[in-house]
Image (cartoon, rainbow, N blue to C red; front, top):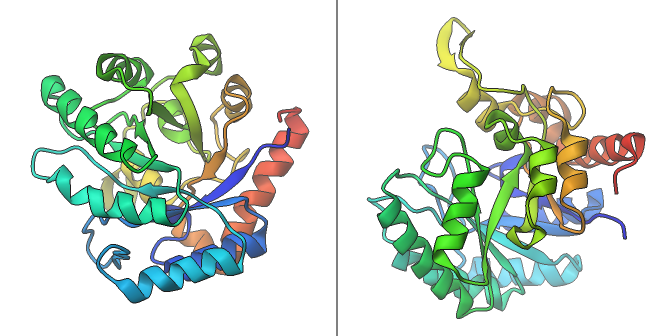
Length: 279
């Protein structure tokens, strides 16, 4: 069975849902992944489908017009200063649009706290038939595959999954062999991109000392096959799950435009997997 691909919001950040849906269709993606729970980042537009009826209807119309299924919404984070109850209206609207999943992440090392909150978010998501997928990041609260698996086991609900981002997994030292040993029940979809492997240190960018790990994740991920991560073994280890391409690169967007970049993301991924015999 051919692998399915979704266009994640962060690949073409700032694009409104209707244009993201159109671009996903025209580029040949199978799904779209929207950011409808804001992160309140400076300068980032907020697409609040639960608070803007016109935007909701326009998004609904675009999904139907382009025959583009909504896979997931983001980002349902767990952090001490965030009120998780505010996520429920977004979950309700995602379900109304046919969405199946919610993406989340953990931003505290207080395990008792985040286990409790993840369980509550999962219960909230289940009310709307949604699955909650928790992403691990090496600089966040849940930092690697084993911590994520422990969280899923502790919560013990059937709609909570580990979300593997190939960049973050590579940075956390996760290998394809480790993923292959892990029961497939933990996985539901993956984030796909490439980048430098291993825990990176500081780098000088435009004469400003910055952290390469954060910079790459937010602004300069690599097309699949152009970095150091063994993407083929990771993806082969988790068959039959969709691949949501999350590949922000401000330079490529400037060079190719948002649609051109989205197209290159998909084309390079498919070419890489064909070369490596990965389905």
